[in-house]
Length: 68
Image (cartoon, rainbow, N blue to C red; front, side, top):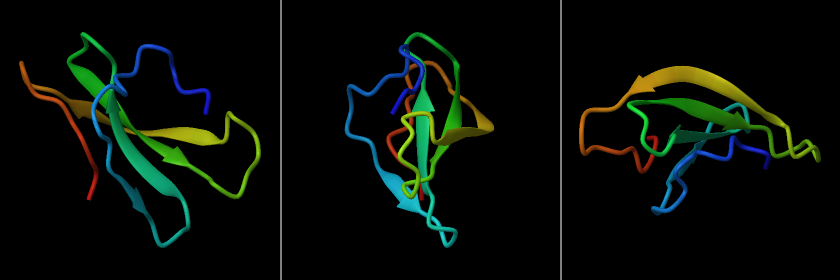
């Protein structure tokens, strides 16, 4: 996937497969205090087959490791 380069993928990430068949990730950029829900469509072959969903706010010293 062609996610933005600055996303923090250094920790174990959980994802949720929705009823729509898409996969949902909560990801935050390194050094940022905001993130987004990224929605991936696994039926598409393009490395750009994702959407940016809702924005997330991060408190100091906190990170998102999953979406449930």
